[in-house]
Figure 1 (cartoon, rainbow, N blue to C red):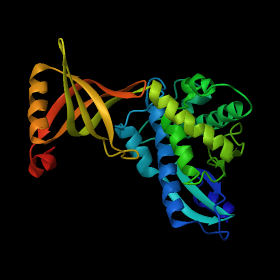
Figure 2: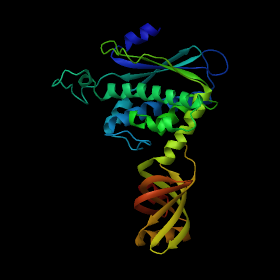
Figure 3: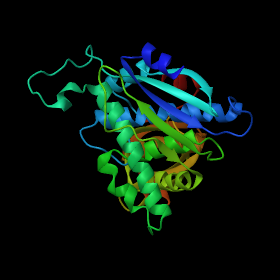
Figure 4: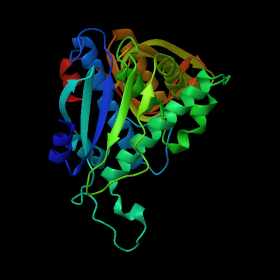
Amino acid sequence: MQILLEMRHSLSDIQEVRTFPPGDSGTAPLVDGAVVVDGLRRWIEAAATSASLPEHRKVLPRRKSSQVAHFLNRARLAAPSEGSFIWKVVTPAADRSQEPLNLGNSAISDFDDFARRSTKLLYDATRLALLAAREVVDGADSLEPFHRLVEEGVSANLCESLVLAGAIQSTPFQISFSWATHMPVSDRNQTLAFGRDELSVIREAAVDLRKVGSEADVVLTGVVRRLVREGSADRITIVGVVDDYGDGRVGNFWLELGASDYLAATVAHTERFTVRVVGDLEYDGNRRWLRNPSDFTVIRDEHDLDAN
């Protein structure tokens, strides 16, 4: 069946994720399956987003370029199989309609378009995250190995996706890559095995990378909880959620506003209207800040919410 799969998808790369959920071979708890599939989507998305940026970041932007969206739309889930439960993701090896082949240089890298660069980065960053986790498990006294590898594509988003691939109970799993037969890759064929210890470390690394990184242009929706005037600084606290991405947990976010937006926030606080604002998400200790706020909007009724 594996040979047949590779023949049917000879123009694509295949990522095989072998999980070991409790229960009968060939089955997985429904809840776990939903979490794992979401993790696989975010895993592919993290690599493609990193590949689309001029430089790698600790925290990746939530808004995706059309190039990333096109790649994700072409990625497919193949039918799972037993052993104990194997997920297969099929990604395009090349997409010349999006990025023509550069024949001006004979270097091998010129034959890699965005699709193949994304998949190679997926392998490399995943392997490095595993190596960083093992370094911490073996006695490193900090999460510095993950920070050191950010320039190689390791990010909070990638780490979060790997944690989700282990489902709710951090079930061990293995990842292997099969490369398109017409574009073989000889140096990225190692099976990557994640155990509970490694997944526990990767979970901590994801949190740590988010706390020291920043996210640009996020959308915060919530209600104004506090108004604070300190000299020339007008600050507010919004209780809300950022975008509709991630775990959707409600949190407190601090902002500094200009005079007109602060006046609008005062009205929203008094009337308990919902507000929406765009900004850059940063952490200062345990406090979350939305820097460079813009498009501060007071949503007075459901019609306004739908319009926004």
